[in-house]
Amino acid sequence: MPAGSEGAVQRGNADGAAQRGDAKEVGSRIQRLRTERGLTQRQLAEPEYTAAYVSTVEAGKVRASDTALRYLAGRLGTSYEQLALGLPAGLRTELRQGLAEAIGLLDGGSNGQAEPLLGDLLQQAERYGLADLESELRVALGTSLLRRGDLAQGRAQFEQAQALLADEPLPRRVSAIRGQAIAHHLEGDVRYACYLLEKTINELNGGGLPDPAALLLLYTSIITPYMDMGAYERAAKAAELALDLAPQVPDPVAVAGLHRSVARTLAARGQFDQAEEYLIKAQGVYQQWEIRAELAQCHWMRGYLHTQHGRLAEAEDELRTALDMLRATGAVFHAVQVEVELADVRWRRGHGADAEQLLTTLLASLGPGHGTVHAAAAHRLLGLIHEQRGDVAEAEDHYRAAIPLQEGADAAGDLADTSRLLGDLLNLQGRTQEAIEAYRRGLVRLARPGTTTLGPAITPPPVSTRRKD
Picture (spheres, rainbow, N blue to C red):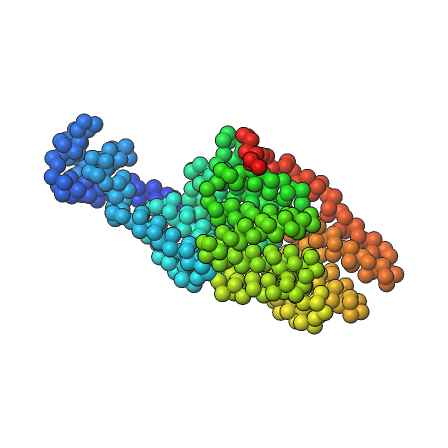
């Protein structure tokens, strides 16, 4: 049983009991509301039921069926939940307004204010068995936890959010599933993140006419793990399918997220000008909606683009801007990831000592299960720094530290590159057999069964959604 599911099942049983409710409490609520509205038992009951039945229900001698409660709620001008659970009038509206406020705080980077608010809202949603709202609140809380590096707790929130909607249609569970995949990716299990997203995409597409917004979210989310695995063609295909869906999705923020991810696939192909165009589109939306956390990601990506162009001064400016914004918004885990790339730029600009100090400090907060890919990148970069200085033994140690992290994360492209660096280092020392073993270690991972195809390709939507040029 997945983590968190046992508790969700127990709570589900408790919610079922609450919905069945205490017959006397339900009867008392019906009688009070009927009296307030000046209705007789016959007027409330007819035409579907009898006055005797209403009398029995009000006396608490029987618990009305869900069908009867929905009928009586309609006659009383109230909601089923108010009759069955004693839900205060207007609570749903208040909770939705609170959720919108919390999301606004998260978008603006005020995680410290958003999380207590989400906690209070969750207590109310749980108390009254509002599973749909509780699920949405847990997704928001999980997002906040991931940003500040509480990966296991964040993943647990997404797992509970999905369990709450286990019987709902798949599109309603997509946000929770996506959150789980992101958590696994950040923890270092990149292949499992891809599996979760691919499985959900294929289920949606195999079920007839899928939800375009849900599919767009999934295709967008799978691009980054594909890129980290070195599956560049898959990432490009996902970007293409998502762009086809974009005209059908009215949410500009969701489309902006796609544009930011597409920029990464274009950069990997060396199409830097086109990547910049998509990045500008995304940045414009985030500025308009004042979503600072995502705007910081745009600066991060622009820093990467400048690095690939060799514009290192501009790259450092963008990365420092991203770093400041992420710290200000409480996204400390993402800030650590940016610092790894900043160290790379500092080294390229001739500041190897600064880069080494930064990386050594960062490795204290990165590692297996917590930023595995970036921990490996830090070790790889430290290996390059030491090799440039002639510290061969130190360089070898860092390359060897990076390789198992990359293997654990299934970052096949990075693994092949680090294995090449280690092999070249060993070969220069005349350690030919060890060099061959290092080269083989990287290549075998690239060519092992299932790595080159990643299983069946993600399926496109069943109906053509080609965008009009």
